[in-house]
Image (cartoon, rainbow, N blue to C red):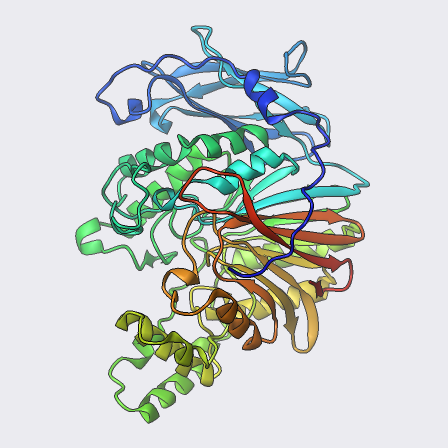
Length: 554
């Protein structure tokens, strides 16, 4: 285990509401009714609690699911008190079979920087659990705290990171950076031997159709710790690849085979539709959220909106038999396709929107500009010493992969072509925009299952920092590099990469990011394990960025 800094538990939430208290306020759900329909697999009535998201200064999006005999017109209510003595906003939302009985509504006319309670009421008088949400601040803002999550594979283990965040109850907003679900069939990832027996996956096939995706979300959202997190705080969420298929891009995916799984466009449309049904999100592919004069959050789509197909180092080396041929192929790739100045990750429209929005945020005097997005933007190359560290106990495919990564590193190429490293021109354009705006840039990232802290630079200038969160349950480097001690591996990776200041390559968890006018403080929280339900922490690590410094203090 990597040694981490131990810290005192964070201060209690300023709301004064305890975890036990809010669940005591929950209304009763309707009784479970038997039905052959997949939609009733988790019962009738309010089947999956409540959730909220898309917070703004005067509004928030509310979500629930109610399975009735057909479309059901639900009443929703928002109150400043948990007893709903006075309703401050109300309206109606339809739970329709056409949207898998999920209902959404925008509660508007709210006061900024305030906690609220909400619930849904069905025509039969049944009441959903009571949720808690909040609006964003306006004007002068001193402090705001995010809880940041990524990569939550249901069958690998319990969602203890969600449970800990709900128990700590010390954040204003949850942020999920993608891989909220995984598309694989049972027994693939995780394998049958790796899967936790009590975490039964439905459906047990790879999800491809509209019905498949709906049932998979219903399975994940039935997890009580995930429900608890959604019930307590609003969430901003972005999809990554596994919400559709592994290593997806706008026109395809590594884990999509048209000859047996049909049209990618149809599968992508189904994945997007179900995500927007089941998640407390808007239909906008990208958006911004203003936290008063403290921060602007930019929710980006680095996956499906404008991404061109990923490069493969294996394909670059295919057919090359001698070291000389391999080096020549890698150098030609480095100077050619990989460096293409027109290559896109965000797409031209989103890229221009981000540049304009960064400039507008700093022009308003906002202190922090935060990218809420999926994949690492920091430069990460494979340590050339890694082959010597592997030993004899790794599978041949792992050794082959790292031999390719080793040669790529010696040629000046990165480790992961699915990250921003595979799109260097697109990254440079974003960095140019951040520098032109004089942004205090914080980049949040998930995807890798490991924890990272980068100083970001461009043409000799400091750009900002990147904070990469560990996964909720998905295994990291330790799962296939188990012959290398965790400390040794992390140390080798950090030493091989100038911008990388710290890494943890072996633990599961989440991170909090506290923003103030003076500094941004990240606490990486590592859970003691995921094979048993527990909120015990194994340790923490703190990283700080002083406003204007664009550099980490660890």
